[in-house]
Length: 622
Image (cartoon, rainbow, N blue to C red):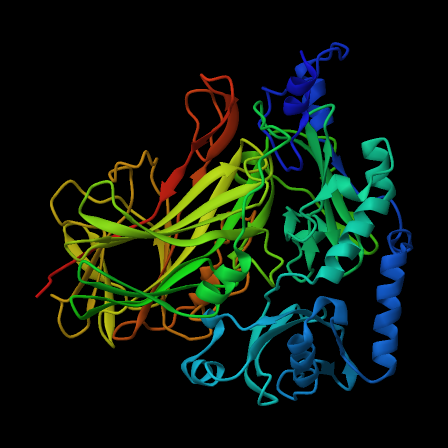
């Protein structure tokens, strides 16, 4: 085996979980059994030291010192340092940290609560209401976000920098934002200096060995499964043994919460990839800070890129008639299944670490679950790692009966292991139909993954709308917010499982046709859950924060909005969440990417995408 081949097989930059049974083992290693390989690769590591051990690093000590000085000054929000902000961002921060509405949750009984400013960036148009759009068309506007570590809540403000005032404040309880650059460096420092990490790796790791430190992560039933804690998941590679150490850092307690060895599948991608050009400034100015209009084949579409909800289409009409208020994919939940590795844990008795109960339980099918929440966003002023490439594109449909508006989002190092690539696609047909499509192009961190894109679809059928499901040959009306697993369309023409109509005219509206492989895109179906809510502006009409759990498969996210409120004769929002399992088996690849030597002897990137999403067919065009 030559040096290049060993390097290619050894890369696997980071990771979570791989499939048991097909593990790569370096040539020259001493013989070991398959069971021993799995145990080594899937070992779970619990923290073994008290809290102060993880807080001794210089970065953590400096941060704690800043917090103490902040509280002693009678302030409750730790500002971002100047080196994370431009001049307008510094002005916006000074305005917002003195705004009473922005600070309304920073005290409890006269006690100041720990809050951090997380992000201050030029206000994406997706975050602006109609009033703010008019102001920000003339003035410089910024978006500011803070996180309350005590109440686990995020507050977002839109700031008119030129006018010196706050235009709006939104409060998101039980929701966590993208972390600041400062907290990313603290997470790296904790992971790099944790004794358990050093012991597991067998050496003192360097900063260059770590990645994904700003991506929120979770380990089922570890301390970070507690949704009141802000956690991220730095990862390390072991290039000699084709495995990765996944460390969960609890930024609320400033400690290591847990660690886990994981394999990443049989196949690998090369260490070196060509540089890709990111026209970041162009994309930000043209697509993130301004609306764009597409007119074609009778369709009128307003679109833009969001900070974390991907590509959004708004105010869509067909032949002058309203079709959509909004449609977008707000998140990708990525969970990995662990076949083995937890058996050594004693689950018969309760375990406490620093006074907190720790338990590892099996998830779906008796497997352990780990994972990430991926947000897709604009390529600047964001800690998201799945970024827009090259701006939205308009292309003809392969069927020749319409066109698509599509946007490519990817990690800069895709298709290397533990890098992701997603496509947001909206298909518009000449007969007035449309489809909301999510495409996963791999490669991810392992070959035993479950992906769940969260779609938000706000149809513009009428001011008052009604949803029906087709059951036993008849239509049943939904009266309250609820959810259910999506059924398959029947073979009978225009007999679809759902329809959404005007409450006063049943001939106006759309049938919902789930994808079960009939759209000629090699899909294996959606296996989706459908959530139905009545419209509220603060439930996703603007750019959203992360919704739901990466790893608890019964927590897609929209269920937080389905509280049984009446929806009949109201404006209805549909949330559609497919569930996809990837596949790396030779000849059966799905949601996968790899680099292989082509017929010309050169590396060739192979992609086996998985494509999901429903189609909407007009009941009548009259």
